[in-house]
Length: 489
View 1 (cartoon, rainbow, N blue to C red):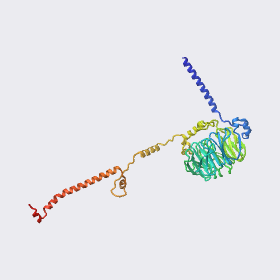
View 2: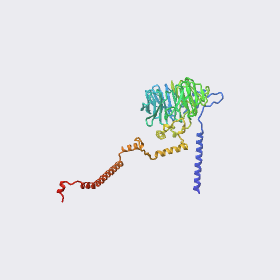
View 3: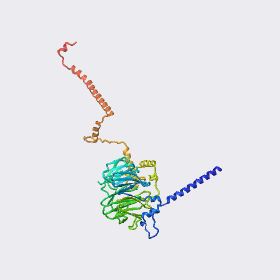
C-alpha cells in the first residue's frame, strides 16, 4: 500500500510538471512579433529614426544596425539569416552577421550577383564570363561554362537547382547535386528576377513591362502578365505565395497582384522603385533613389508608410530571415537597419534554419535535404503536386489498368490465310522466318530433308520392282539368233 501511494505521488508530480511546462511553452509560442506602434493619433511611425529605435530595442537587436562603407551592387542572405554575401566593386565578401565578422573574401572578382547554395560553405558568383563556385575559404571549386554572361542568380534549395539569366536572354537551370545542366529556355533578357518561396517558380521582369513565370519542366512560360506600360525594373513575392509586387522606375508605380488569379492589380502605389523585397511577416520594402520605405498593409498609402529610412540610392534589398533587420545595397555603402516586426520570432531547426547549428548538424542537414530532394517536375503554378495524393477518375484508372494488362500480356500474331499475292502478311512472315537460324529450325530442316530422301528412295525402289517382270517378258519375246543355237541345251 505504501509503495502504491508513493508511485501515485510521483506520477502526480510528473503530471503537474508536464502541465506547467506545456503552459509555459504555449505562452512562448503565443507571443507575436514586436511592431512599432504610435502612442497617439497625431504620431506617425515613419517619423521614428533609427537612432531612436536602437535606443529602445534590446542590445541584441540594436546590433543589427551597422554600415560598411563601399559601393555595393547586390546582397543576399542565407536561409537561416546568419550569413550574407555582398558584391562590391572589385571583391565578393561573405559576412557572419551574428558575430559581425568577415567570413570570406574573394578578391579581384567583379560580379553582378551572388548567392549561397545549400549552406554557407558554397557561394555562387555571377562573374562577367561564367558562374563560379567558391568555398568558405575563398577558393574556386567549380566553374560553370554553361552559364554565359550571367546577370542574375537564384537558388532553389528544395530542388538543388541554381538558375541564372544571362545577357543573351537565356534562363538556365543547373543541378548542383549532380553537376549537370537541367534545362534552358529562351526567356529574353530580364532586368530583375524573384522566386516564389513556396512553389519555387521563377519570375522575370522584362524591359517591355511583362513579368513571365517559368518552370524548368516546361519549355514555355507558365504565365505572362503585362504589369506595366514601361520597363519592369523590380519585383518581389510574398512569403506565403499569395501576392507579389512589381515596380517600374520609368512609369513611377508599384503594383500589387494576386497570384491566385491574374486580373487587375489590387493596388497601385505612386513611387519610382529601384528594388523591392517582402519580409517573412508581410512587410514590403520599396527602395528608391533617396532611401527606402516600408509598408505594413496590403493597401499602402503613399504618405503613410510604416517606416522610412533616408540615404543614397538603393540597388538591392534583402530581409534577414528570423531577424528584425533589412540589408540595403547602395551606391555608397552596405547598410543594415532595424525593422521591428519584420522576421518570424521562431525558427524550425528541422528545416535547417537554426543559426546556432554546429558543423555536424550542418552536414546532417545537407544529407537530409539531399534525401528529400524534389524533382524539377514538381515546380508549377499549382502546388497540388507536393504533399498530396493524386486521385484519378474511375474511367481513367480503368484505362490505365487495361493498358498495363495489354503491355504485360504476350504478343499474339494472327496470320490470315491468303491464296495469292506475294505481299500478303503470310508471305512476309514466311520470308522473314527463312532468315531465322536457330536450333529448332536446323532440326526441322534436317527432319524435312530426311523425310524427303526417304520418300525419293521409296519411289526409286517401287519403280525398280515394277520394271523387273516387264524386262523378263521383253527378253522372251526377243527373236533367236545364231548364238542362241550354240548355247542351247
